[in-house]
Length: 293
Image (cartoon, rainbow, N blue to C red; front, side, top):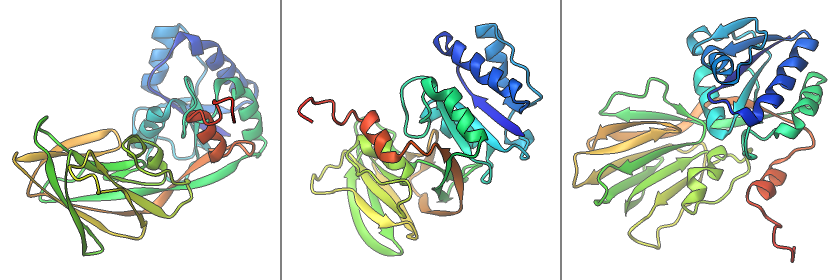
């Protein structure tokens, strides 16, 4: 068996967990294909050199024969692991090195138990939808897919932008706001949630269109089927606006039209059978902390 390991940062308080993690893999004779930059940080910042079999630097030399991809960090690292591996067939597994995340949902206390379950076939595969984004009038993103969301934002700190939205060619509205988010079910618990968007379960076949600080307070988030094609056209006092896919962003001219649709493929994420989305919601959002509950 072969696994890939991706990470971006290392912390000393997680060093013992990492040692147990790599020791388990060695004892079970599992080949390790590791992100080179992360491996170098383990050596330089923690003084720890795990035994590995091969390295990758990006999706260009990623070994697609790996059985699983382990992302070690938080939800942001999980998104980076998807970007740096770009494999839609190998299940992604999030090991959280800090606070519990929605994507990196295996806590450090459960790492060895989780590994035991995974390598004994006790897990659930969940497929997650992605966005495909096309910029018309500007160079497209080199990798024009997003797991969480696509966002348009004003570039001027004082001037709002006017965002015209069409769904399947039908006019929805024009919104003066700081920006607009189109989120997948996965992304519904990220940026969209922070500006008042609804929570969708990961298996929902919908997208959320969420305005950011709209000038008219009657403008509310809208949930649409994920087979919808959404077109955005932006006007404003400036000459450019910002568009982003997950953690990547670029300034584009106002003449640019953005078309967003569901990608023709999904990514696979792996979860343990005793973990579920509702449990993660309760823990992450601290529902039930009030002792009256």
